[in-house]
Length: 204
Image (cartoon, rainbow, N blue to C red):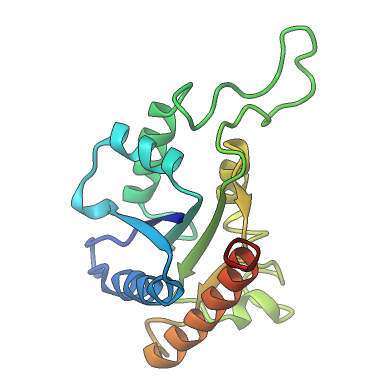
Protein backbone atom coordinates (compact mmCIF):
# COMPACT_ATOMS: atom_id res chain seq x y z
CA UNK A 1 0.00 0.00 0.00
CA UNK A 2 1.35 3.41 -0.98
CA UNK A 3 1.02 6.28 1.50
CA UNK A 4 0.26 9.90 0.60
CA UNK A 5 0.46 12.93 2.87
CA UNK A 6 -1.59 15.90 1.68
CA UNK A 7 -0.67 19.30 3.12
CA UNK A 8 -3.32 21.97 2.63
CA UNK A 9 -1.59 25.32 3.07
CA UNK A 10 -4.68 27.46 2.46
CA UNK A 11 -5.41 30.11 5.08
CA UNK A 12 -8.23 32.29 6.29
CA UNK A 13 -6.46 35.63 6.20
CA UNK A 14 -7.34 39.04 4.80
CA UNK A 15 -9.67 38.55 1.85
CA UNK A 16 -8.72 34.86 1.54
CA UNK A 17 -10.91 32.23 3.13
CA UNK A 18 -8.81 29.24 2.10
CA UNK A 19 -11.72 27.72 0.18
CA UNK A 20 -9.94 27.36 -3.15
CA UNK A 21 -7.19 25.14 -1.74
CA UNK A 22 -9.79 23.21 0.22
CA UNK A 23 -11.45 22.44 -3.12
CA UNK A 24 -8.10 21.35 -4.58
CA UNK A 25 -7.55 19.07 -1.59
CA UNK A 26 -10.95 17.45 -2.10
CA UNK A 27 -10.15 16.85 -5.75
CA UNK A 28 -6.86 15.25 -4.77
CA UNK A 29 -8.68 12.86 -2.46
CA UNK A 30 -11.14 12.03 -5.25
CA UNK A 31 -8.30 11.04 -7.58
CA UNK A 32 -6.48 9.05 -4.91
CA UNK A 33 -9.61 7.09 -4.04
CA UNK A 34 -9.87 6.07 -7.68
CA UNK A 35 -6.56 4.26 -7.41
CA UNK A 36 -7.76 2.08 -4.56
CA UNK A 37 -4.80 0.73 -2.63
CA UNK A 38 -3.57 4.08 -1.26
CA UNK A 39 -3.56 5.26 2.35
CA UNK A 40 -3.82 9.01 2.99
CA UNK A 41 -3.28 11.50 5.77
CA UNK A 42 -4.18 15.18 5.53
CA UNK A 43 -2.83 18.18 7.39
CA UNK A 44 -4.83 21.40 7.22
CA UNK A 45 -2.16 23.84 8.34
CA UNK A 46 -4.65 26.54 9.28
CA UNK A 47 -6.39 24.17 11.71
CA UNK A 48 -3.28 23.68 13.83
CA UNK A 49 -0.81 20.82 14.14
CA UNK A 50 1.72 19.14 16.40
CA UNK A 51 5.14 19.55 14.82
CA UNK A 52 6.41 16.21 16.10
CA UNK A 53 3.39 14.36 14.73
CA UNK A 54 3.97 16.09 11.39
CA UNK A 55 7.55 14.83 11.33
CA UNK A 56 6.18 11.30 11.72
CA UNK A 57 3.82 11.91 8.78
CA UNK A 58 6.68 12.94 6.49
CA UNK A 59 8.64 9.84 7.48
CA UNK A 60 5.53 7.68 7.00
CA UNK A 61 4.64 8.98 3.53
CA UNK A 62 5.80 7.76 0.14
CA UNK A 63 4.42 10.90 -1.50
CA UNK A 64 3.80 14.40 -0.18
CA UNK A 65 1.37 16.68 -2.01
CA UNK A 66 1.47 20.34 -1.07
CA UNK A 67 -1.43 22.66 -1.89
CA UNK A 68 -0.69 26.34 -1.41
CA UNK A 69 -1.84 29.75 -2.50
CA UNK A 70 0.85 32.26 -3.37
CA UNK A 71 0.75 35.54 -1.46
CA UNK A 72 3.01 38.38 -2.53
CA UNK A 73 4.98 35.93 -4.67
CA UNK A 74 5.81 33.62 -1.76
CA UNK A 75 4.32 30.90 0.44
CA UNK A 76 1.67 32.18 2.86
CA UNK A 77 2.93 32.86 6.37
CA UNK A 78 1.15 29.87 7.94
CA UNK A 79 2.66 27.33 5.55
CA UNK A 80 6.12 28.89 5.87
CA UNK A 81 5.84 28.70 9.67
CA UNK A 82 4.71 25.07 9.39
CA UNK A 83 7.73 24.15 7.28
CA UNK A 84 10.12 26.03 9.57
CA UNK A 85 8.75 24.29 12.65
CA UNK A 86 8.27 20.79 11.26
CA UNK A 87 11.52 20.54 9.32
CA UNK A 88 13.48 21.89 12.29
CA UNK A 89 11.75 19.38 14.59
CA UNK A 90 12.74 16.68 12.10
CA UNK A 91 16.47 17.22 12.58
CA UNK A 92 18.01 13.78 13.11
CA UNK A 93 14.48 12.38 13.45
CA UNK A 94 13.84 11.41 9.86
CA UNK A 95 13.74 14.66 7.86
CA UNK A 96 17.39 15.73 7.73
CA UNK A 97 20.59 14.83 9.53
CA UNK A 98 22.89 17.69 8.52
CA UNK A 99 23.64 19.97 5.59
CA UNK A 100 25.71 17.13 4.14
CA UNK A 101 29.17 18.67 4.38
CA UNK A 102 32.14 17.38 6.34
CA UNK A 103 34.62 19.45 8.33
CA UNK A 104 37.40 17.90 6.26
CA UNK A 105 36.05 19.43 3.03
CA UNK A 106 33.33 22.00 3.79
CA UNK A 107 33.30 23.41 0.25
CA UNK A 108 31.34 20.52 -1.28
CA UNK A 109 28.30 18.32 -0.74
CA UNK A 110 26.08 21.03 0.73
CA UNK A 111 22.45 19.92 0.67
CA UNK A 112 23.12 16.18 0.77
CA UNK A 113 22.19 15.46 4.38
CA UNK A 114 18.48 14.81 3.89
CA UNK A 115 16.83 11.71 5.32
CA UNK A 116 13.69 11.48 3.15
CA UNK A 117 15.31 9.73 0.21
CA UNK A 118 13.04 7.48 -1.81
CA UNK A 119 10.06 9.77 -1.26
CA UNK A 120 8.61 12.21 -3.77
CA UNK A 121 6.58 15.40 -3.63
CA UNK A 122 4.27 17.44 -5.80
CA UNK A 123 3.05 20.99 -5.33
CA UNK A 124 0.07 22.94 -6.60
CA UNK A 125 -0.07 26.72 -6.39
CA UNK A 126 -2.91 29.14 -6.96
CA UNK A 127 -2.36 32.62 -8.37
CA UNK A 128 -4.28 35.75 -9.21
CA UNK A 129 -1.66 36.24 -11.96
CA UNK A 130 -2.60 34.86 -15.38
CA UNK A 131 -0.39 32.19 -16.93
CA UNK A 132 0.66 34.68 -19.61
CA UNK A 133 2.41 36.77 -16.94
CA UNK A 134 5.01 33.99 -16.88
CA UNK A 135 5.21 33.20 -20.60
CA UNK A 136 4.83 36.35 -22.72
CA UNK A 137 7.80 38.60 -23.51
CA UNK A 138 7.61 41.88 -21.62
CA UNK A 139 5.17 40.59 -19.03
CA UNK A 140 5.76 40.71 -15.30
CA UNK A 141 7.80 37.53 -14.66
CA UNK A 142 10.19 37.99 -17.60
CA UNK A 143 9.35 34.60 -19.14
CA UNK A 144 10.40 32.79 -15.97
CA UNK A 145 8.23 29.86 -14.90
CA UNK A 146 6.63 29.47 -11.49
CA UNK A 147 8.97 26.58 -10.67
CA UNK A 148 12.16 28.32 -11.80
CA UNK A 149 11.17 31.69 -10.32
CA UNK A 150 8.95 32.14 -7.25
CA UNK A 151 9.16 28.45 -6.25
CA UNK A 152 12.91 28.01 -6.76
CA UNK A 153 13.60 28.16 -3.01
CA UNK A 154 10.69 25.87 -2.23
CA UNK A 155 12.03 23.20 -4.55
CA UNK A 156 15.55 23.54 -3.15
CA UNK A 157 14.10 23.18 0.34
CA UNK A 158 12.55 19.85 -0.59
CA UNK A 159 15.74 18.73 -2.30
CA UNK A 160 17.65 19.58 0.90
CA UNK A 161 15.70 16.90 2.78
CA UNK A 162 16.14 14.49 -0.18
CA UNK A 163 12.62 14.64 -1.60
CA UNK A 164 12.34 14.11 -5.36
CA UNK A 165 10.18 16.49 -7.37
CA UNK A 166 7.16 15.41 -9.41
CA UNK A 167 5.60 17.68 -12.02
CA UNK A 168 3.87 20.68 -10.44
CA UNK A 169 0.46 22.08 -11.28
CA UNK A 170 -0.34 25.79 -11.13
CA UNK A 171 -3.77 27.41 -11.06
CA UNK A 172 -3.83 30.89 -12.62
CA UNK A 173 -6.17 33.85 -12.69
CA UNK A 174 -8.25 32.39 -9.85
CA UNK A 175 -9.67 35.73 -8.70
CA UNK A 176 -10.51 37.71 -11.83
CA UNK A 177 -11.11 34.95 -14.36
CA UNK A 178 -11.80 31.76 -12.44
CA UNK A 179 -13.31 28.68 -14.05
CA UNK A 180 -13.22 26.23 -11.16
CA UNK A 181 -14.84 23.30 -12.97
CA UNK A 182 -12.45 23.58 -15.92
CA UNK A 183 -9.36 23.99 -13.76
CA UNK A 184 -10.23 21.16 -11.37
CA UNK A 185 -10.82 18.87 -14.34
CA UNK A 186 -7.40 19.78 -15.72
CA UNK A 187 -5.85 19.20 -12.31
CA UNK A 188 -7.49 15.81 -11.84
CA UNK A 189 -6.19 14.77 -15.27
CA UNK A 190 -2.70 15.97 -14.36
CA UNK A 191 -2.66 14.17 -11.01
CA UNK A 192 -4.04 11.00 -12.55
CA UNK A 193 -1.32 11.00 -15.22
CA UNK A 194 1.42 11.59 -12.63
CA UNK A 195 0.15 8.82 -10.37
CA UNK A 196 -0.39 6.35 -13.20
CA UNK A 197 3.25 6.80 -14.18
CA UNK A 198 4.40 6.48 -10.58
CA UNK A 199 2.20 3.62 -9.48
CA UNK A 200 2.07 1.48 -12.61
CA UNK A 201 5.17 -0.54 -11.64
CA UNK A 202 3.79 -0.93 -8.11
CA UNK A 203 0.32 -2.11 -9.11
CA UNK A 204 1.43 -4.12 -12.16
